[in-house]
Length: 384
Picture 1 (tube, rainbow, N blue to C red):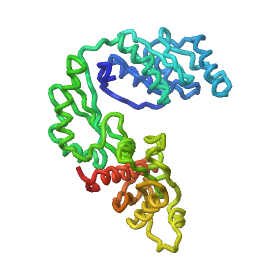
Picture 2: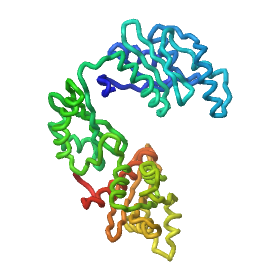
Picture 3: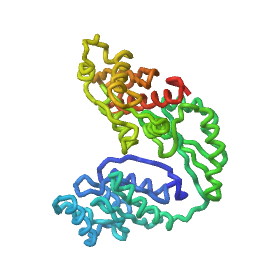
Picture 4: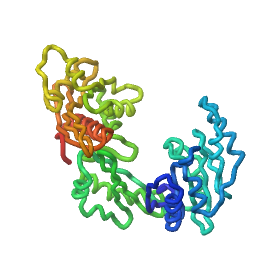
């Protein structure tokens, strides 16, 4: 949106009920020039967006026969039958412009309300929505909303500290400048800062960010790991690739979250040569040799597994996560030790966290990746 010169003013999540969703759409349309929805365009009874859009705009639903064949064709490609319920996806509010879905069955649509605001409805499947945004929505918005000035965006990404710590380090910088603003974006285990520059031209908008970004980087130091499309795993993979080093992992309590992150960032396997994911007892038993058992949440156990990861492969480094997850109420809690071994260098870090299992797995994986990032640069294991 920002790249099109349209600044977001709000975001809301709504359930599947027709009336609550219609009410939310009416409210959003009262305060914005364009409203975008995602989800609820499928063939089942709980896909309520189509009907809610009809109610919110006062446009009755009409059947578009020309939309049926693309749906039928897409289902046939996937070896799935065309059910009568799929015809629901061919109903759009009267006067709406159909937005083709090149990778899915649910077409989107754009409908202009009587008093001006534009409502755009897209599927909730992320890769379908993203393709439709690029192919249909961006051209539509560029034509509908000619830019009155330019906006530029830079997203700075932090790991190793919470929002309150980052806010305290930034101090008065969170107020931005006359031509650039800072906003927090929370991601599980990370803090992202969205810097938006304003200017007459694209170049001027980008230049407006530069001095503010420099000050933010100076304040946050090593907490900043990357920007824009960077992930922590992609930064670690890039650092290892530049050094000609490879990495292997052992995960005893993170459910494969670490291996998944690395494999996604290194699809050609130039850096990440694989890993083991197994219950703690299985991993420790595989070490053999009558070793004295170590508690799963101990530094010694994590280091032993990291050495195993490095020593048993052609990798230059080994990364291990080990710990104890307690399935308590109201949510699980975990005590982890994360360890990295790189030649004679060894680092270990303790991590205590809680939340749903996917959340604590992700936090532990991020902690392990940050640990090796810091080792590669010769930094301390924590702090700005």
